[in-house]
Length: 244
Image (cartoon, rainbow, N blue to C red; front, top):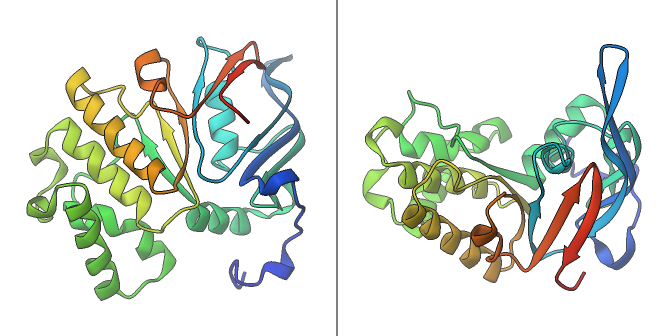
């Protein structure tokens, strides 16, 4: 593949009001032996640029499945998922990987930092896959480390950091490719309440600066930071709070 610069090679569509991500009657079915389990059932929703969504619901409601589909880590069984107008079902695996790498940033509950790498190297990792010049990566990593308050920890390894510092590194890594959408899966789940508040303040700052954030959380206090709240139940959208 020659890259997403060759946009004409990828089928596109235009969801209404320029949604950055959109589900059109999306169903996701997982096979459990001979039984099909509907994790999502004909869900339609649009996420627009600059919004901050909290995706909520009880265990088994479909919120994690929704995040996996939004992150192009899985594909719908039926229906369409459009990411910036790209129908992900029409992309091959290489195209999908590149779209994910260039357009999305991921923040996980367990941080997912590489223990053998320094803070600087962890932050720079996505640029390595994108083939960036190392010197440019160093400068971006330093700028992001300063932005998250860890400029004095660039040569430390994850084991030398607190949980909150590790999550800040994970956020910086998610931002280094300047993604259009930041996906966060229970970003405060492994943190104490005070540290979790600091992480949510950082995400709120990013939202105020125009970043689109789609976050799964089961904590109402965390969800209050979002501009929109999407409640899932039994694979369906149960309620939406905030102007869509």
